[in-house]
Length: 87
Image (cartoon, rainbow, N blue to C red; front, side, top):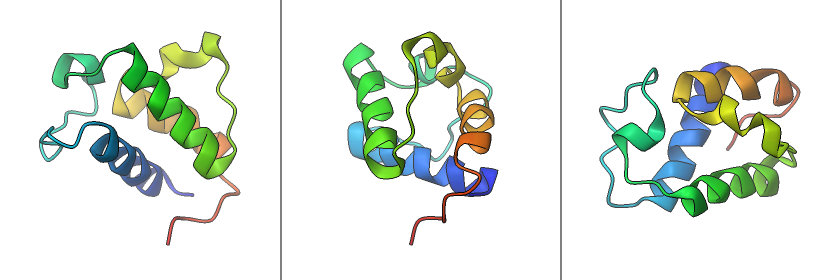
């Protein structure tokens, strides 16, 4: 999957987890928690969705790589490189 596709997957997950948030002006360089009302359970939901959808395992010590959209896409790109893009 290409980085742009991964970004869209993450946006789709965020839209399901926080349906009242406006994601149209999400800044990729700013932490999700600074832009959205996400708590630690919401963050875990993101990780669980990625695991469920793509069978990607994200160890707890790597959660720091999922702070911003840019860091999340960068972290997931090598893990999802052989995954087909979503339909």
